[in-house]
Image (cartoon, rainbow, N blue to C red; front, side, top):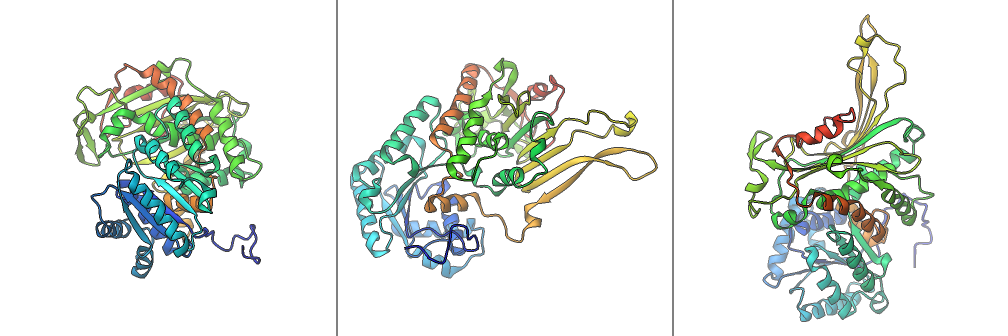
Length: 505
């Protein structure tokens, strides 16, 4: 029974899930160690986990309970965002369980099912469980079939809710995404499927909607009458790390453009939803994804690149072909840039330039709205040489915040005008630091809030944008660029042909 003194409109109390279990497949992997276990600790430390909450880890059989406890402790302590409190960890650790086994091991999954049944009574979780797939995409079907075989995916049979959390990439093209969606929706009902794009859990990404729809200042000029172009950049200063096998089979477009950047584009381009109901928000994003147009000539309207040896932040960086386990003749792109359009009344004629790259000069993800220049400048041309386009820049990471660039008179006797910037930073404006994206997303899964999770239609429509690019690029050789540069020269030429330039991030 719910609290009779609390209403849905009362935001003073935090959102706390019902008693439940979080089952993490691949609990000893990188994602779990770096993101999930620290996020669970931080949620516990903030008092946002329910009584009786339990974590069940599932991983290969050469791990034991003691090994898992040591790994979880080290991971939580290293990755925690909030202050470390040993008493919080001890309470949380007492509710950790480990199930060893491989994904084709029927006995291990039978053991997992029996453990959840036992916890139902002992911890009072009434059958509520979320299954987190922190595993390679190729293993998804195997685990889904095991959950189906044992009945663990059946909410009615469990006596509570059962949810599944699937990490990107969701398929490797449109057809594989459709097949995976059908399999997941056959084992779980669609509203119990949570497809994670961790970018949507970032405070600055959610702030795009607040910036647009909570203020009357921006929305009137958020259209083709005033906006010249939009640039969305995701630059990383690192290489591929230990992801060689996955990355070489995917490339920059499949790895990041299909999910993170198209989701950012959808949030920038969407119409105002009638409410922040998850279905309403996703419906508006889907309209934008369906309206995306590719260049008439993909060869001239897009660029693929691959980094050569160079220098990043004063350190020598190897080329992509020199990375461990990368074939010497690989044609996989580590950089991709493309000119997209949105075919609707609001955005007709406005180019959306989207780029992603590895081994760039620095790490930055930002969305830049570049406005048209004033139709008439009554100044001497020499006085406005330093004046550029007005810009609204949303910095997703790092230095999260918003920058507004506009022209202002330079102090002095002449009417010289040049760009200045008003800079809002999250870290300075708010006393509370922003939660890590996985904190918000894990909590939303346990609560059942699907607002920040793309649905099957969004995923499939995103692949409809990427597949033609991949088809056009097949058999071509990426343009070279040195590590530490902002991509290939052809990327600058892509914008220069239209009288524009990439914003200096």
